[in-house]
Image (cartoon, rainbow over all chains, first blue to last red; front, side, top):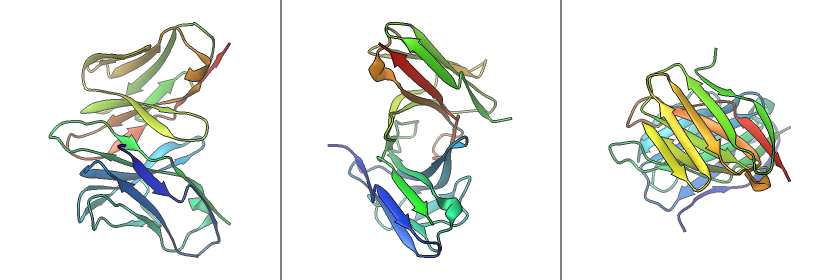
Length: 114
Length: 110
């Protein structure tokens, strides 16, 4: 089954404790992205990647890091989480085809930083 | 002013009603996406449009590039259609930058 898998689904952590949210897709997609969703603000893009070793900042990259060492994986790293990073996070992927293609989303990771 | 505006923000309907959700944008785009988010959080892509009209079951999406406007229609609405519907625009082809509207919360009552 074609899917984007995020882990964990839920995470409560303390301020300053490094964490990684993993994202994996099994569709051989070139594009992968991370978003955060906050009440009243909607979805905002954190980082995106157009292929292996190619990443770029979205609209709200501060406090986050990403890497794309393999095509299928795009982990989101919070080196020193803060309470303002409490949010619902989504990973998404889509195929590059020289034209617009459908996006596939993971199930979301609800992160609470206390 | 947001670059992507949706209306209405909230919508309630009786089962069977015809529903329209609107999305207006102020930037040049290569495509527009309609997404559905059910309670519990998962997001599903419903449509991707760059012109014209698409239909999938009871759902119809249209886009008018000149007017920078898109609509999502649901015919014969059902309680299982209750969800948040999100419009997102892709700015430039071959990048992955998306700008999202804040969503329309739809509740359909039996």
